[in-house]
Length: 174
Image (tube, rainbow, N blue to C red; front, top):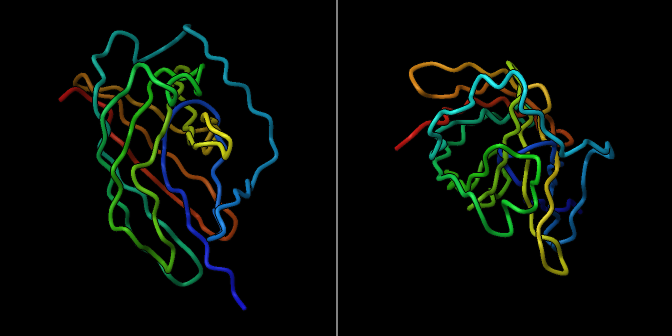
């Protein structure tokens, strides 16, 4: 019998692990790396930009199935989710659609964090803990960063088990 899984698809601050969540609700991280949540203020191409929104898409590939998720969200500067990603430059709450892709349920809203270091960034997944509180885990630690016209452009990719994800996001002001 196959186990139906829910896939957490999100992008946000610093190094964060993404999880495939079995229907029974127990989280199963797919990466045991211990990425640091520290950030550096040196060489930030995004420093001083008025970032308040996230607009993006992710292409999801699972076996022969592929599809595109659309993401729209707002920046949070305080709260438990922002506190969980202490090294993040930006934290966003994202609404993701469609609700199902490649036979996987999509969790929405989704929380993402971003830590920028020069021309690269780390995208974080921020997830609730079973006993309360929140935890940040790295999804992609080598996202490419470009700044233009007061916006930050991110290109990234990561894998969650048998699922490959390629994404792009525009961080800007409303």
